[in-house]
Length: 350
Length: 268
Image (tube, rainbow over all chains, first blue to last red; front, side, top):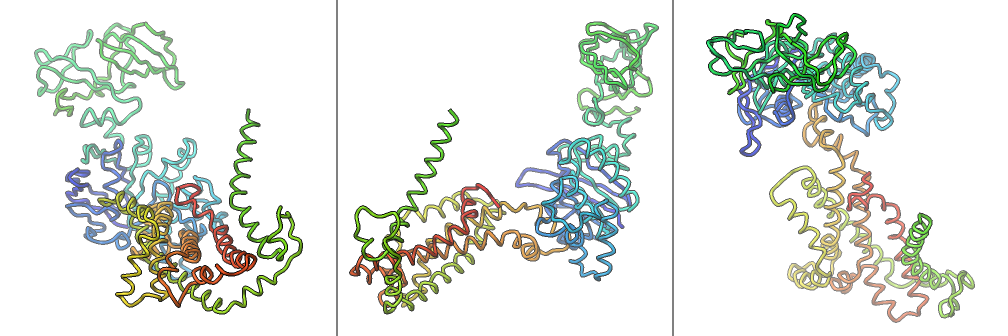
């Protein structure tokens, strides 16, 4: 086990920057998810840590050892690939044993480790099959077992669940969390799926354009996004943003008077999550015109507009509403995120 | 409608089969059907009588066995050279994006656009200067030039069919670059590489023009038979032809699956 320290790493493909001065610390035994839209550099960062595509500048330390110039095999890590990369010409048993065989481990140790990893992933009965005889989900289990069998200091995972169907993904996600929590392996996990990151990770690093734009626990990021990008990327449906004008240091929204941070000048953006709005029966609030109501079961999702700006609101399922109606809404005062409408960044004091 | 399409499809297949099989059948008929069948017209579907006399006579021709041995020697050299030179080039084309890789790929194909004569005649002069004229090595070099484009393109699509992630996984789990190639890529590529080798062998085995130009005394089987049998009776010619056809037909039949890899169809 070891910590990972990524120290001002940059990576260029030709002249195109893919990573811009990225620094990140992953503590020993911690599960960190790299989350971002495609092309944000998350996979590039993971491959730099693995040594598959070395960085252009900066250092990577694993367990305090500078591995920047070491080939992948000398870095003491294991990896699970997006398309599993299970060796098709080897039986499941030999696939799982591959890393141990390469280190020249004793035969009885290999057998013990293979049995343990297989038991952990519930694939004991598949050990003598070839990967071609397995389903996608089973291959994924073999790939994870192969990585766990070497008891790596660091485990890297590149969108390991993205090729599975929705139901299987949910099942594997829960199982993976259990297995990895038990193994206490330092894990760096790349995903573009925010629910996956929220559900699995101890901390999430949000990436955009080759930079880490916010790092924190899932709830911290959900509650306090540092920018409109993060607020919009995390959460489904995403955070609502209303552009409002500031007069005399306050913002008027319907009958409400809200006080943004003192640094707001002229205009400000109010960020609010769909579920942090209440229907105001007493008339204190702002008018929201419903375009489409969608009763989803746990809540009713309303798409509409307030003051000409489109919004999505989740209200309890016992409200009966129709398209074209208006309702009065009131935001939870402590859940409002104030943003600078020009830079898209959160304003100081929120 | 679909019935008509199906009939067209089937008759197309039959036509293509007839195109290649009828000549082979006629050669076989002449070669082992006895002297009467050779000159008979119309041809009987079944030979009047099986006779291997032409065969045995053919096999006793003086210089046949040395020529055949030489043919094998040349074909094996051609096979080895094509693999040693072609497989790394195929690997490079499949794995690395480099400037001019498409031009390179095209140039490889272009080498086949020149008639063999354009290659063989200047090479004969060159080989005389080098002092390797009339040796199996000279013929093997010429045949390698013919087989190499196929070796490069087939192995390149072969390596393309092996996902890069498999190699990367091998690196992560403890392999060096060559180690990953040996433990992961090679086992997966070996059937296709074997097919490429056999194909190079067959190209060399069948080739007659360059072999005739580049040798005088040390002729390969095809070149030797060309000079020898031009005066022989028809049934002997046909018996010799049949003996030459059979190995290559057999080999091509064995490796046909992998040859489609050139066109990117039915990869593995």
